[in-house]
Amino acid sequence: MYKGIAASPGIAIGKAFIYKNIEVKVEQRWVNEDEVEAELLKLNKSINLSKEQLQRIKENALEKLGEDKARIFEAHLMVLEDPVLFSEIEEKIKNEKLCAEFAVKTVIDGYIDIFSSMEDEYMRERAADIRDVGERIIKNILGIPIKSLSELNDTVIVLAKDLTPSDTAQLDKNKVLAFATDMGGRTSHTAIMARSLEIPAVVGLQEVSEKVKDGELVIVDGINGILIVNPDSDTLKNYMDKKDEYLKIKEEMKELLFLSAETVDKKRRVELSANIGTPKDVKGALENGAEGIGLYRTEFLYMDREDMPSEEEQYKAYKEVVEAMQGKPVIIRTLDIGGDKKLPYLEMPEELNPFLGFRAIRLCLDRKDLFKVQLRAILRASAHGKIRIMYPMISGIDEIRKANRVLKEAMEELKKEGVAFDENIEVGIMVEIPSAAVCADILAKEVDFFSIGTNDLIQYTLAVDRMNEKIAYLYEPFHPAIIRLIKNVIDASHREGKWTGMCGEMAGEPLAVPLLLGLGLDEFSMSATAIPFAKKIIRSFEYDEAKELAEKVLLMESAEDIRLLIKETCNKKGINL
Image 1 (cartoon, rainbow, N blue to C red):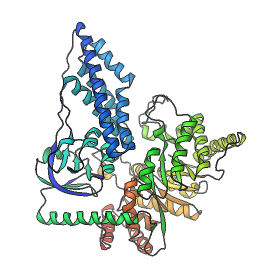
Image 2 (image 1 turned 120 degrees about the vertical axis):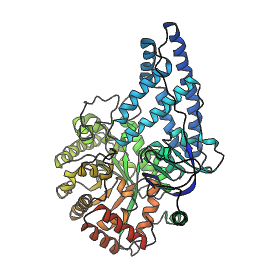
Image 3 (image 1 turned 90 degrees about the vertical axis):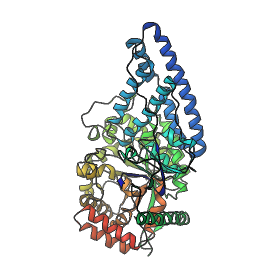
């Protein structure tokens, strides 16, 4: 059995197909002066061919996955059209007399190193996209055929070192039961594609593609992040039953889709919301029964462009989301950029520890000009529906007060201009820094709501870089310290008559749902596809049962014991986690 990261839920049983993309070894080679033009011509031909191929893949993705996921290949095409990147490659050929393929490798590797070293998980995962484009260009220069998963003969489970977005966009869902990869994380485009295709997937399995042989029977458990090779008869039967149960639950969840997230005894109702990055994500949120948007990551408006988005551009994007949600609440997080998430048009300092550096609200309070533009756009959009504003990376009360002063200035400006907005707009904060969680009783007096960002809260509290493989085992959402901090935040908000949500990955973790319900969490915000199962769990519990579970957990000493207790409790209710 191999343990990895659950990237896309579901259970699949089948024969392994080891997918090995041809790895190209590019040798350093120099050319003569009279060969430079020929190398430049090879480069340009390869770029044009790569564009044609990616355009076809994009169209295929559009048909199979929809417009939102096809945008991944727009990003790939943008890499191919980046004048800075390709001027660097051309300079390598012209000035250093490097052959075209090695010039591409040198420059692309440099960009991969930059992105791979970033603290932010989303930005780090973009290194795979740059690698994908680079390999395509090099193979086209060398005339090496590019393999595709669209031509499989048998029904299989694909195992690979990694799968590029191009690979997953072309795979035949009727032939691929699931996939498992050595590399990757939950926010990689590969994982996102798998969830869109509703194919079970486990990533981050390290060297499993080297250890498993073609044709061996494997089980992919995309719920718990497990790969089992050559299972014995008991394990096989157990997983066949689990698969049947999961499919049955999926059918049941369709019936639950537009029912409320309410406990069996009707004593407690919570709100299940979706995390989104672009207006195009709203469709998936609504299709999965989201009662609101709990986190709109506005930084995506600022990325993949050469200049700052204008107030009008931002207003239109926010307006599109709030109108599509038809009266349901939308929490817009103000700009969470800076440090490791750099923008080409925004000058940022070099930092030794950017994740703890000049970012998010810290950057916005320093650059009030860009902060106010965003706040004005959000306020204008609030005239079209129920919008809430959320400040990220808050460490203390002074930051809230300073941010609210800028918000007040924006409101006064709009009033003078005769522009409509919601004058009673709710303002909250992300609780993701331990100081904010500890002082939640102080902060609750200044805000309308809290939303707990567990991804950062966990790594800051436990002093664990969650992407460091050597200490990843210490990144533990069920650590007693984390549970107590969450309880403190919820209780502090309730004492002030306010509410607390959660928009970190923990909110969509099935094992955490009954515990968070019992702790008194008011709103859960997660990936859209996780909503139906979370609702199923909530509707299986009585509120008193969930509270009793939470009380027991708060007295426990280890994450392992906590997980075991929750699993046993859920199993008794017929929910196998």
